[in-house]
Length: 146
Image: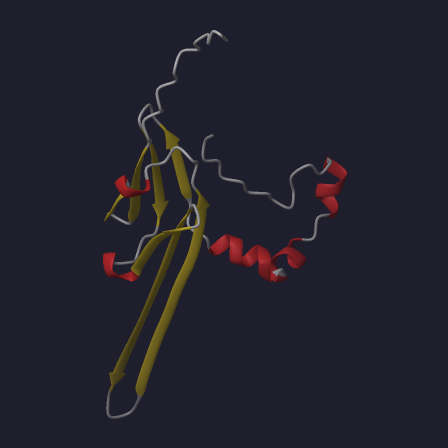
């Protein structure tokens, strides 16, 4: 079993005439679609002994992430808030921002949970998920009935 990212775009499987009638305004008002646009990009690679996952999350710090494994899922959450205040004798300017996302990936059965490693550098959260060793299959053996 391999990890697969599924992303359905509203314009997939539309004919050319459908695309001409496609209303982008309705799409931009669709809260579910806007939430999907805020999700970070994700790359998943399967190698011989491991899976590698790269999640683009620029602007966050290492302390902003919470990662856990529960019920066979890798759960990634990040929250960051900033506020700035500038005062002068004639004005006060306040700015604030809040960014967050959550992402869950179902892990294949052959991932060794205890060997998952994560690191964050240059805006990319990287995971290394080691595969479990396949149990050795026993050769079939004929049993004589007495």
